[in-house]
Length: 104
Length: 366
Image (cartoon, rainbow over all chains, first blue to last red; front, side):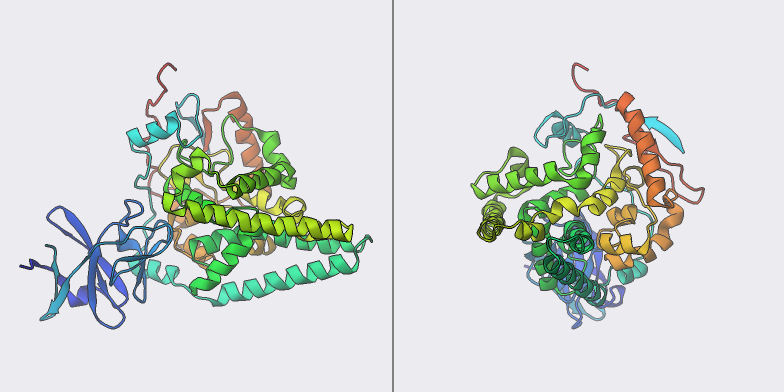
C-alpha cells in the first residue's frame, strides 16, 4: 500500500523549481515542472553528499549545485557527469492544492 | 591583514597517502563549506543559463584564432609573423584554460552540445585529458586545497617558486602533460587518477588520450613532411609560448592562502582585472565567488560579486597587487611551510569558519 505523506502546498514551489522536504530521517526533493506536474526524488546527489535543493531546475533536469551534474528528475536518470548513478524517484500526487509523496 | 599558521607538519599531496586518509577521518573531505547568504530568487536569476554571451565570445575567440593563424602563416619566416603568433598563442595557449573550465562546468552555454564541443576543443589545446580533468576538477570543487584530496593543488608547500614561475613558458609542464596523455593512451592510469575517476570512465579516459595523441602525431608527421616548424607553431607549441596569461591568472587563484579549511574566503582570491584579461580568463578573477557558487555562469560573476562582496575579504585591486601579496606569502612559506595569508574580513562579513584552523592534526611520529 502506498504511504502518502503530505509534503507541501502546490503554491509552495514555483514552476521550474524545487524545495527540500524532510520526513522520518530522510530527505527528499520535490519538483514543480514547467508543465505543472509535480515530481519527487531523493534529496541528495548520488555523486557527493550535497542536497539538490539549492540546484537549478532547467526544464525536466535538476543540476546539482556543487558539481553541475544533472538528472532527469522524472526518471532519476543521470544525464551529465560527474553523476553516474541514477537518483531514486518517488510517486507524487497533487490533490486539493496539496502535494503528497509516497515514501514507501 | 594578519598572518596565521596551521599546525599540519609534513604534507603528503598524493591522493592515496596519509593526508588523504586523515582528511577523511577528521571530516575535511566532502565537507559542508561556508556560503554567503543569497536569497533563492536572486540566486536562481544568477544561475540562469543563456547562450548569448558565450556565443559572442566564442565567435570572437575563433576570429582571433583564425586571424592569428592566417597572419602567422602568411608572414612565416619574417618578423611580421611575431605579433600574429603573440595573439594566436595567448588565445590558443591561455584562453583554452578558461573555456575548458567554464564548459566543463556546463555553465558557459545554455545548450549542452555547445559546452561539450568547446570543452573537447579546449581540452586538446590545453593538453588535458578531457575525461581525467572533468573528474579532477569535480574533486577540486569538493575539496578545494584539502591536502591529500584535491588533485589540482598548484602551490604545494614548501613552495617551489622557481618551478611555478617557469610555468609562464611551460616547456616542462607541457611535456609532462604529454607524458600523461601517452601513459593514458597506452592504457595505464596512475593510482591518483584511479582514485578520482570512476572505473566506468577509465575506458573513455584511454580513448580520449589516444585521439589527442593521434592529432599530435599527425601534426609532427606534417611538420616533417613540410620540413617546417610551422605546423607545430600552430598546434602544440602555443601551449608553451602562449600560456603565460593562463599561468599568470592561475597563480592568483590560491597561492599563499590557506590549506585544509572549509571556507573559500580563506583559500581563494578575487582580483580586479582589466577587461582584456577578463575576456581571456572568462571572469575567473572572481574566484571566491566561483568556488562558493560554481553554478553561476562566468558572465554573471560580476553581479554575484557586487551582491556578496561585503561578506568577502577585500579583493586585490590589480594583478600586480595580487602578485605582491603572493610573493610576500611565499617568502614566509619558504621559511615556515605552515604559514598562510589570512585576510581581514570587513565588519559586515560573517566570521571565518574556524573549526579546522587550530586543530592538532599532526602526523603520527611528528
